Image (cartoon, rainbow, N blue to C red; front, side, top):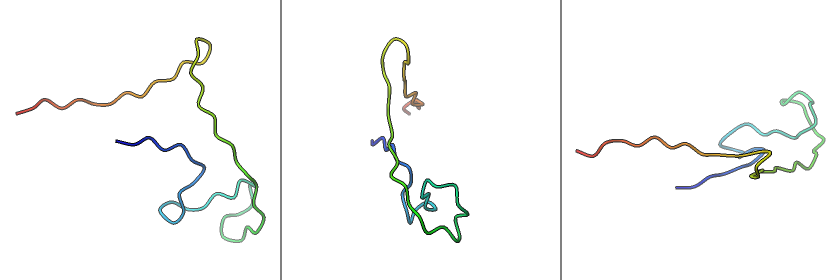
Length: 54
């Protein structure tokens, strides 16, 4: 099991250069930062389904 937090995963998903330019013609790139908050003011959770065993 893996949790991936990312701005993109090229080539699996289309690239996102973070500039708002049209994706097909964009040339500039901007660094993106991701943040995962977990505190009383901003709780986070991952809910996974559980399948019954047979």
